[in-house]
Image 1 (cartoon, helix red, strand yellow):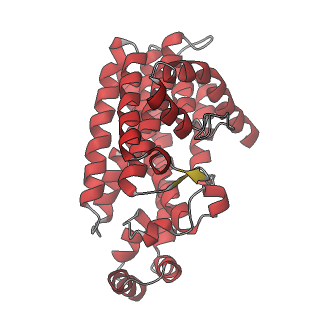
Image 2 (cartoon, rainbow, N blue to C red; image 1 turned 135 degrees about the vertical axis):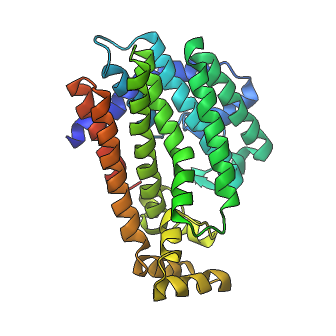
Length: 325
C-alpha cells in the first residue's frame, strides 16, 4: 500500500509539472526566479535542482476527480490540480516571511535569499496565476479558499497567547484544512460531481487538513531535522502556540502549569518539549489526528466515490498521519 500511495504522489507530480512549469514561465524573469527557487526547481543562481515537495494536494485533487469520472484526467482537472499547487506555493512563501523562518526544505527560504519584498510579490503573483489557470466556473472555489486562508492566518497571529484548544483547531481548519478541502472540492467539481458530493469531499479534505496540521506540529517539536528540513525545536524557540503546546497549557496538570511558567521565563527548548509531552500535549495531538482521519473517512463514505478512488484517498489520508517530514 505504501508503494501505491508513493506512486500516486509521483504520478500527480508527473502529470501537473509541465503545466506548473509553463505557468511559472508566464512570470517576468525576477519573479520567475524567486518562484522557481521556492518550488525547488533551481538554486539561487538558476541552476537546476532536484524537485521538492510531496504533491499531496494535487494528488488529492486528481483522486477526487477519479472518484466521479472514468477515463484519463481532463485538462480542467489537471488545471485545477495545478492551481491548488500554486496556492500552496503562495502560502508557504508568505508563511516563511511572516514566521521569519530562514529554512525551507533543507535550504534557505526564498525571502532569506531574495528579500521579503521579492518573496511577497512572488507569492501574490502565484495567486493570480492560479486564478488564471482554472476554468471560470471554478474561480469561486479558489476565491473562497483564499479568504479562508487569510482569515485563518489572521486568527493564528491573534492567538499567539491562546490556550483554547477548540479555537486553535478551528484556526487549523481555516488554514491547512481549507486548502486540502479546496483541493478535494475542485477535483470533484472538475470531474462533474454533484455539489453535494463535492461538499462532502471538501469536508473530507478539511478534516484531513487538521490532521495534517496536528502531525506537522508534532514534527515541529519532536521531528528529526534531517527529515523535516527545519531546525530542531524551531517552533518552541519562537514560542509559537502550536496545537500540542496549547493542549499542554490547557491540561491543568503540574507539567502544564510548569510549562506556562517556563514559557514566560524563557526556558530552553529541550525542557519545554519534555514538559509538553509530560502534560499530554503530544499524546493528545496524535490521538486527535487519528480522530480527524476517522471523521474524514466518514465524510468520504457519504460522498459515495468510486471504490478504487476511495482506496486511493484513504491511502493518502493515512500518509498524512504516518509521515516523518
